Figure 1 (cartoon, rainbow, N blue to C red):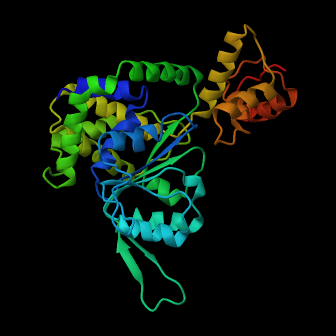
Figure 2 (cartoon, helix red, strand yellow):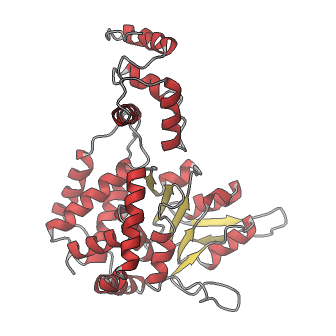
Figure 3 (tube, one colour):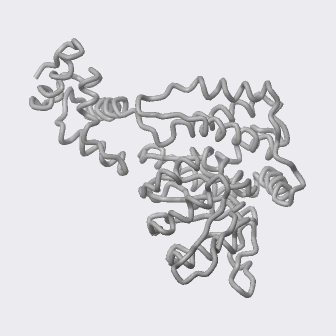
Length: 363
């Protein structure tokens, strides 16, 4: 199967969401303790690219359960309203499956603690009470997908997972809507069925241990490191060796799912996905401030705008971020136009600018 055919099929299925779709496919393969978290506004396609895709590929069959209500399909969806004890039992019953949590905001601290343990290095998680005479300890060997609108999860869960963030973009949202209508009208799923059948067959064989995890050679490993090192990080991005392992693992999963990494087009896609996940969820605050400012002024043919209006626009776009200091940082870094009108803010920024011998902004 040619990589360009797969890319076209993914774009047809949900435009602009390839990074999410690739990791959804990887998670369905049930790699050991592979997990990723999807942040994004309602309607962006988080459930469509995870739950609905698993249904279409027949890896998630909601009615396929045994007499104890344990899911029998490779992919299962966790109940949103379960108690911590019920959630623990769900993890136990499906410890080797791909588990999708579709609304993380309903997870309590106890739920989160189970996730931290299950996604840890050993995968061992337990539930004990004062009445227990022995420890109930189990190993999680499956994969996990967590969909959420705004809810920030515990850092320990986030560092163990790939973070995928989509910010509200009106133009993309509008384009996605028209693309989705065309997809349904043209019955595009059936037209791309050869691609989906190929991916379904590969995933099935991986789940049943008929295909081993791809091993990178030295040349391929060097390509991964080169891609990681080529990314320009914004000032508030941190990096660790755990990140190296994450992107090596993504590359190995590409090789496993596609059978080889010999095509340059595959490496172009790997580079795009690695770069997306390295900076996903990380915002270069100053660049975003000036982008919003410029777009607004260009659209309405203005040369200035109020601080209040600018904050309002930023808060709409970045609903899960505290943007109080963003504008101050942008002005301090000499990014914003001198025409933004807030004397007190400019005076405060000029104090910082004097320290670094930066030319003052006009009031």
